[in-house]
Image (cartoon, rainbow, N blue to C red; front, side, top):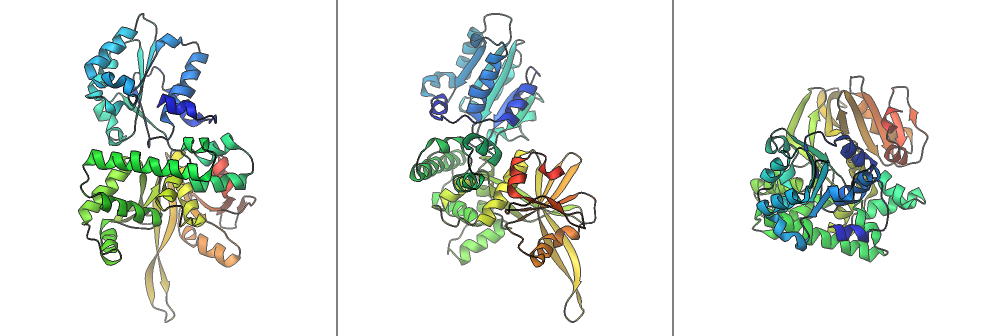
Length: 426
């Protein structure tokens, strides 16, 4: 992993995550940096955080860095060997930083990390890339002394800060090849595509199949292809199973599909957004939406076809909200309206995203373009039927000045949203 880091010549700022690491220093917790593989966890710890520590007076011999993906460190995957190695490196009472990449490759890693907590002058940071590091498990595994810092692929703001230039050109590059950092080290389209394809096949998919003992690889591939071609579409295992039977003439049980979706989520390839009844104030478990954590992977799975910018934009907005720390659901508003005969009926309107963080909540619509008043009414209809005081926002691809209509609905441009951290609070 460290060798791979050195091949990426573009300097990328990841200030959001670096700040979290700095704030967590010496807090007595095991810091677990999670995220999809190759999203930049190692770069964050071994370049950005490492240089921060050096610049702030930490001696290099008090930084114990171990990459367990490196074959040279294979013996350190043994828990007792690891413990002896670290203890032998600690020579005095000054503070030592223990930084371990892909710690799940070590046997009994939880016991080892809990042992490190008993070293008074040690502060431990590790990376992990799969379901061993689901945030819900970490407090239990580390007896309440574990802290998760989840790293996502590059946001558009991080991406643009690295490559600069024309925003429209940067956007086309980003929505085509995504935000996995090493993609930008390749100088041709084909090399970027080959890298992403190889990454998905030999790292993500192979890891999922091996770790979960998936018996039918073709079924898993078909599901991934289906999810990639329908990002942001409401679905559930039953609906997907019926689709496979009717369209692809393949029988995959609901349970198998549910398991596959869990595997993809646990490996951080997919993220799930649950439907929420805004007026009824309850979750609806019938249908959910799934988004890819990196849009470049999604495009590569489809061989760069089906690049509908509207759906890709929706996926990227979802990812940006997640990156900013929001819990993101899909909203549903039920209304009653009369038909042409005056008979009243119920209908459901959708709010693309409900973004919640502490006491803050935002209702967000993704609208590629609003060329006229009719389209504006259509996009704002669900928002108009929400009877609370939380902010209601429409994000459009067009470059516009932020504006608020007479009903208090804010419309902002995509670049304003993606490049300005406080854009939702204009």
